[in-house]
Image (cartoon, rainbow, N blue to C red; front, side):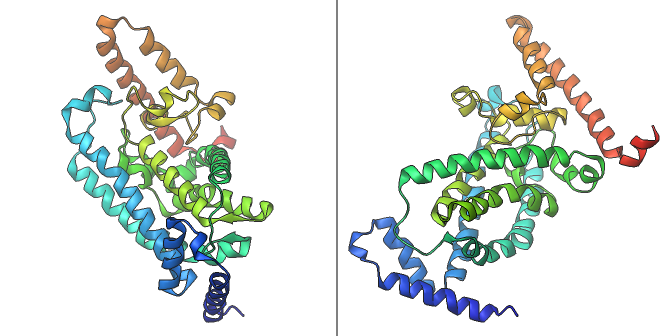
Length: 329
């Protein structure tokens, strides 16, 4: 029988034994603070849970704030992908309320259950010292690839009639997304797509034999930044995809919300390119690029309107789709 109290004491004893064998004079400042936090809390499960949730909230909303400021400043409209659709404060507040609700009712319980699960798979949590920067960078790069592949498949599945109608439709409420809308989603969608973010590191830990949770945290921070930026609705000359061509960015994902179809990946573009699920996106970009400079603004507005109209029709078709209907056709 599962005994939560016994499990907590077991983790406490392991942490005490580990720290008794560490020479703290050889640790970096960050490693000392890490150990001090776990020692102060006194229980690794609670220490990991509190730190994980606070980090998530600070990073997510902290990354959203700059985009909210940018949305409020007309100067940045020239880089807005859908310039006529600026989120109102009412929309952003409505979005924030649902995001906070899901954070506290859906994500918080999962976060506090993460430590026992992570330890079961072999992940290090309270241990010091940290892995090398090189190792962490390679592991995070791998997690980006793994999550992107999972998201590509799962995201397409969520566009299947019943799954879209009952789950994914909520996230597509905003055809012109904004930063706060990155986690504006149904609880089941959070679980399904979140599996790619958490499942990849757990799977890696199981097969590789070890992974430090500090690497996991760095990965989560970068993943949150990527998600918020992809929903920002802005494409700047210095945006990452203009430096790294296979990075997706807001330019890639904004089209998905506008046209409803195409561009199912999160971080990269290559899977959409390989499997042809970016054909409409590439045709759209080609039409805009071919426009004469004098007519560019007018034509781009026209193409935007046409693409959005097609997206509305595609969304309605997906919402009404069912396997039974397909068989009877």
